[in-house]
Amino acid sequence: MTKGRITSVLIGLAAIGLAGAGQGQGMGQTEHLNRDRDEEIARATTAVKAAIPAAEADPDRPAFHFHAPAQWMNDPNGPIYADGWFHIFYQFNPYGDQWGHMHWGHARSRDLVNWEHLPIALWPSLSAGENHVFSGSSFRDGKGRPVIFYTSIGDGRDPEQWAAQPEDGDLIRWRKAPGDPALKMGVDGIPHLAEWRDPFLLADGGKTYLVTGGGENGRGAVFLYEATDPELTGWKYDGVLFRHPDADVPNIECPNIAKIGDRWVLLVSVHGRVESFVGRLEGGKLHAESRGVLNEGSYASQLIHDPHGRLIDWAWVQMSNHHGWNGCLTLPSVLSLASDGTLRRQPARELQTLRDHKIEVKPGALAGTEKIGEGDLLEVVADLDPGQASSVGLKWGAATVGYDPRTRTLSTTGREPVVLPESTGKDLKLHVFLDRTVVDVYAGDGAVTQTTQIAHDKLGGLELFAEGGIATIRSLSVYTLKPARFDLSHFR
Ligand code: FRU
Image (cartoon, rainbow, N blue to C red; front, side):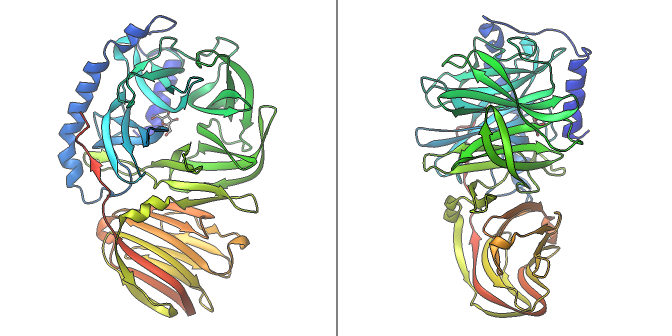
């Protein structure tokens, strides 16, 4: 069963009341919800540790894309910056390398590149009838205290949005909040919606808001709620922030919204892709002015504004089967707006710390193929003038990133061909990372980005090519990369 299918079956069962009974609702349930925490986290951690040797032995597993210590992971959740650390959480199945038993894994990093795995942060409160801790986000309340909001999936009940609070300043141990459920359908004017989940918080005009994904009357939408107190315990429903323009989108997953300059960017996950809508937020509605796909090959994004003023995104890289592990996150990437109002996505500069050796390649004419590197951890930064060539680009064995200058089409193995906007100029600017089986392509200064995957045994050497005419290498840097550090000493 695929992950998406399991999710909808579970939620479907809950909605028609076929799944078991037992639920913890209303105020004063804190003990009830937290009673099994230490036992459940210890049990889950033991299961993950048992899978670590198999995960580490797999040559397919990426070396610098964020990944769990072992077992299945999907969406990034709740990134938050605190005391010099970036914290990232993620959907985590400690009990297997397929989707199930959703927990929140947790890690922190000072540089977005090297990570310390931390104890599992959120567990399903099984003794209170909670089966899964689904996706969500982090925020700070009116007193600056971190809080997580996530979707709680339980037996025989509709999804609910729950809050959790840290017990310590390092954000290691978390408790479900006293007021849970924080938001519940049918209460405080909150209507009944399909697939109601994935809360994300934002502040605007001195108020704090929460958005969720879901569907209403068969159409995917993003729903807006407003905090009624600074502790973020009371919420009122403000209506539909955004309705998806396509009739074949029954629900939206993982909405994220953030301000860039004087515009707002809304990311929504539908049909296995992250779509971006950029526009103005007025009267509780997003008025979209442009639309795009953000990094085809990834799903369920999360955004964070960092202390340097950057807007950083991560998303889940979905994979086929692996033994003892599955899934990783996209490279931390910075979103910005180009002068034409469209989104740009560039790798975070901290990734440069992974560079090991630089392979010198001189500028000049390019005809046919030229070998430029070897290995399975590589970075390429290229500026190619296609000249008279009908196609230019990069090849690794079975994979190609090729560009046809006549149609301005970029074709990456495993991805849809995409047209580069005129604003990116005549040259092909490529920034590519190869991390064993995962390949990230940033083209046209981040106007088009894609993540694709390639079998490890089909890699071969890295080649530059020009077909049908002579192209010019204007500049080219190739680096071998080091693996990132994933410290397991705090994973306990
Ligand atoms: C997106 C998603 C979310 C949900 C989570 C469950 O991949 O389906 O909507 O909260 O995964 O793992």
